[in-house]
Length: 265
Image (cartoon, rainbow, N blue to C red):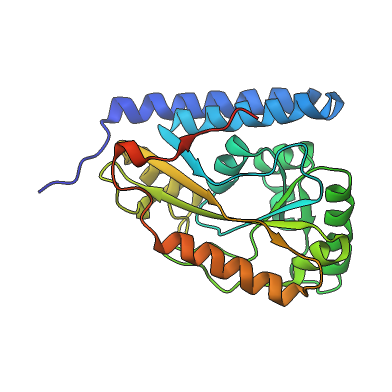
């Protein structure tokens, strides 16, 4: 049986809409730093939702994500795809920690710099101290930060080893950790391997995603983990266990059991 794929015309329209969203993001990023925080978060969420919509990706979530009233919130998520940033932003606008190489990337680097992404030089161990301090400063002001502690992407079936170094920021600030499990499903409800960004170029990844009739991004925010009286390795282990447990569970069994679609806050 031949696998279903998206017609060429539809793929072309999606790509055009995606490029429009990218250009829109560039224009918005010019004024973004001068807007109020609530406006920034609204811009971030709407842009991310637009990016996903252009690719016919629907985002569902379960659990309670931290809102603006939650102080010192640090999201920790598994890393499957370059889509992860958009899926998290569409549900819970937040700042991200990214490798320093991204800062010099065309377009993407510019967008990341304008929205306050925190960059780390992973080759320099000494930079870990600095980035932990930067994360701590951000979350103590009431903003949220999301990190991907695997240091790379997986296929979405289970996580890679969680590195504990960036969780020192949670220990230093006694932040609440919110483990977020991310996975992508295809039109048949099976794990969508085409969404995974592993050993492939960005262009090839985009091509595979465009061929999918539709994709569902499912996020599960686990119960928060208190960092008080815990060290960073304990936090890494507890987060990894929570996310792996979520990934081992069925996303949902039927239409009535689907999780909620995009919170309003």
